Image (cartoon, rainbow, N blue to C red; front, side):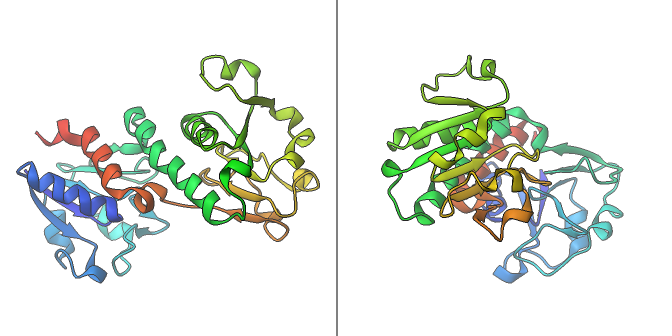
Amino acid sequence: MKIAIMGGDLRNLYLQVMLEKDGHNTYLYGFSKLNLGISSLYKALAAPIIIGGIPFAKGTELFAPYNERVEIDKIIQNIGNDKLLIGGNLGCLDLKCNFIDLLCYEQFLVKNAIPTSEGVVSLAINYTKNTIKDSSVIIIGYGRIGSICANLFAALGARVAVVVLEQKETLKTNFKGEVILYRDINEYLLNFDIIINTPSQDVINHSNLQYIKKDALIIDVSSQPFGVNEEIEKDIKILRPRGLPAKVAPKSAALYIKEVISSYLE
């Protein structure tokens, strides 16, 4: 099968190697800064299957951090309706072709949460002055990322609490730590060194600021419009890491992509 890998980050470079080992004929486009792949966009667009990044587009451009800028409209207008496009956040684009949005696959999201959560732990280690064992961590949200983060920090000896909207959300979990209802969050924030936010709703803003330690670290891994209001960034340290799977474990992250799309490449 001829497959064009168009842009994306290090995950797509590892994915290309895996697909080549499986016998596919792959073309790389969008890695000119690494002196890799082809320079012809139209040769890449000729492939029956095109794999992009996560996300496929960033603003009005192809998400291709290792390439010169390419307008996304130039690509979309030239993807025929007989092609299959694979990538992230594709539903918001005006596509005429068939597509697979990886961010709509629970199998992928569950596994992708693992390197994301490990990246959060790494940030906590690098951006605080205490060991994790001597830290207190509060995690807002107990979904895919929140639940893994809670278990990782607890395993490292931290005092861990999770914030949920309703108590019943934790009944199906094995988490044995402290559970806090969101409506009561201000009563607890001052007790924590590290605040991790996972939902995209407005959950931390100026109304919470007086209850947060001045030297606390906030790690917001939610997607836009983000769960931590930008207006408080001048008062407290906030990290908004993007693309953690590609930075922490690109090879594993590539394997998770391959597991989802393999059946479409036969």
